[in-house]
Image 1: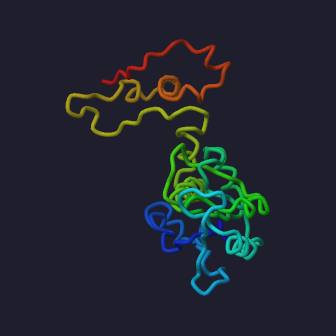
Image 2: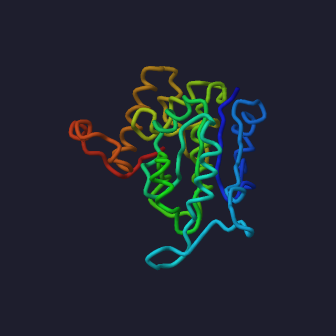
Length: 241
């Protein structure tokens, strides 16, 4: 049985969405993963399927009530994988986290809306809180799509070349090196000669140097203190043929 993704949401029609196409879509058709959105409204106990209330203490917006979320979480508790709650205050989504989650049998993702979710249901179920960036989205669904895309591409057999998942940004703590393809010259811009040399050691060395240079210029936070101290200053100006 493939990787099982369960998404608790107010908008189940958003799934699989873009994940029903391209690489993830082919994997979905092949049964390498499954997508099961669960509508939180189905667990309400009021005649209007209302899922939100005014916040205690005042303030703008509405807060999702604990009861329907609690019942929805309990209903899927035995499904495979950890429970993840998409929230701006969560730990950052990293390549390592995606790889760790892809190693399991599945994942359950809780998507919030409005101003947030009643803290008591979060405290009760203690989900892994994950953020896709330092910005606010309209709801957790788009973040869940990002998380799932990062996971699915790492599932065994999804990428035709298994090395594709190891030779890219963040896998070794660095941003990825530049890529080039045919033609060798385009609008007066040429491919770096080392890539045409056939010298695999030299190519690997060039790629490693480029990756480190790009990381130092654009994401120095990815370099640990020892590496940063040992690295020579790098110009932020990118020189390209």
